[in-house]
Structures are given as structure tokens and as C-alpha cells.
Image (cartoon, rainbow, N blue to C red; front, side, top):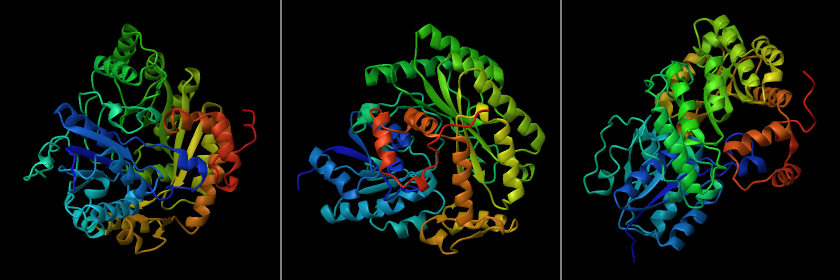
Length: 464
């Protein structure tokens, strides 16, 4: 069997979308910037690499591309990244196909949120895998190509290099990513990064240089990068430094990022808008004081909501599209949901769109059971007690007021209340839809979709 000397990185896709299965959901692209970081390191060392995203393609199609490109079979490992538990069924099929074609292939599996909680559980789900790598692999990636791989959990600070997007198969379709910092550590009960310390943001000059380099990779400035930072909270010096660095570099790139509603000030928003920020994903989650406390979002709900209100107004004042994330949480009642709805109604003029969904317990029993026990005290229960072990995805009956079905219906209703088709297309096309996906493409897909599953309304937004 002829073998290459290339390393194939494969980001596992999904056999169906994680929320609602419709054509628009299947168009979305999720750039696996963690896998791209590893591919970039190996490329800099002189190793030929290629990153393929499974998206919603069949695993056999992706493996077929690797065969056509001559990358697989290889003398070097095939690196499979599983970005979420929703991608696990895809990964299982892919591993079986790899093993059937090349029994001697070395399959190395990563994905910190899927591998880390319980490697023994995952290995039982992926018996074809030769090696599972928990945690972040930047410090280890070179050793994984040797016969003595290093599997220690070493610190992996935010990379100070620019991701090489052309290593992605069909990279022009993807909006690029620029990683600014890692970690959060704010302690929210449902968050994977609740106990992971927030790192210092990369220097503004580094960020501006990265934006310029990525624009050069794509050959134009019409990119719309996602500024990756789980907890984006720049101080006064950093925010003014970023605006100055972008101005000095002559950058005219629009970008998107995410933060908490209580982490940014109006002054920060003004500086970030000057530096090109156009979309801000805001983790409001709830406007119910009871649920704010239950989620451990803040010990002071009134202060939390006051800052959220101020921030939303600042976004509106500076032309920033605010996409608000809402989480229907364990113990949700008609009263707590009405408190959130009332807050959103009061601020609808400052909200471009919302993303709403019921909370889900992710992970095998070793980790999911901790959350499930806590949520049970609020009257919540898993839809299927076996799901944590079977799939790592436990859907939840939130309370007597909201079983799983009614929580899903409430999520759709709330989303449609604040988001129309224009807003949805703008937000998705900014960072998630293929760069060549047009409004005409979108309208055709809407026409071909079951509108009862779409999270937006077709008629115009009501006046403020």
C-alpha cells in the first residue's frame, strides 16, 4: 500500500444539526481553529498537513477526499478532532471506515471537551482509536508523530502565531478565526470553562498584525473574522491600544466576538466599534433574578441586569449588532421566563437577534451526573437517564412548567419574537455561512425548509 508523508487533520462533522434539522442549519460552517492551530504548528516544522471539516458530509465522502488528495493512507497518524458530543456518531463511522481501508492506520483523537471528561468512556465508544489526547495539544503535537507520544496535560497558553487558513481544504469558504485569549473562570454553573483561569489578552499590536496577515491569506479585506475569546473583557489601555493599532495599520476589517453582558463598558464598545467590531454575541442567558442566581451568573442580579441594559444601549448607539444568547435553565417556570421576556421587550430596539435553547447536560456519567444532581434540586430531570452513557448528551425536562417539548417550543417562540429573516441572515452570514452564500441562496433554502423549525419570523419586526 502506497503511503504519503502527510498528516491529515479531520474535524468530525455531524450526521444532523445539533438543534433543529433544516436546510439553513446544514449550511453553517464551524471552523475548527483548535485543529488548525495544531496543523499550523506542524506546517511550520516542515510537515505537510491538510485540514478537512466533516460539516454535514457523510464520513465516506471526507475519507474519499483524503484518498483523492493522496494524503491517506499515510506513514503518519490521522488526527481526528471531535469538537462536540454531537459529532461523536460521525467520528465513530469515520474511524470504522479508516480502519476498514487501512488496518494499520494510526488514529489519534483529540477534542478537549469530548476526550477530557472520561477517556475510558470515550475509548469504549471509539475502539478503533489508537490514542486519545485529553486537553490542549499544542505543546504535545510534535511528539504525537513519534513512537513515544507525550500525553501530559501541559499548559497551553493562547498561541502567539497566526493560523494558516490555506491549510484548510476549501479555506476560502470559511470565515477566519483569530484567537485573542483562552479561559474564563467566572464560575457559571453550566459552562465548561467555569474553572479555567482567564488568560491575558494578546497585545493589540499582535492582534492588528494577525488581522492584516489573515487578510493577506485570503487576498482581500472582505473577510469577517471571529475574534475568539471566551471571556472578552479588555481594560481601558487595551481597548484604546486596539483602536490605535488598527488605525495605524490602515485596517478596515469587520469582525465579531463574544462576551458577557457585565464585562464590557460603553467606552469599551466605542473603541471596539472604531476598530471594526460589528457583531457582539452576548451571554445574557436570563433576566430572571432567580435564574441568575441558580446559574451562578452573578451574586447581584440587579447590578447584572443594569449593566446588561447599559451595554445593549451602547451597542445600539455605536452600530454594533447585538446577538443575545438566552438559556432556558433547570427550574425554569412561566414566571422566570416572563421576566426574561419582559427584559428583552424593554430592549428590543437594541437587539438584532437572539439565540434561545434549553440547557443540556454534556458529557458521560462521570461529569454529567454532577450537573444532573444539582439540577434535580430545582425540579429538573433528564429525558432519558441512559443518555449520558449512551451519547454524552442529556436533554432535560426543566421543571413542572417546562418539559423538554414545551421548552423547545418556548425557545422557538422567544427567538421569533425578536428576530426576523433579515437579522438572522445578517448574523449567520457574518461568521457562519459560507463566504459565497448569498441572500438569494438563503431565500431558496428558506423556501425548501419546514418553517415551523426556523428560529425567525418572515414578517417585519414590530415598531419599538
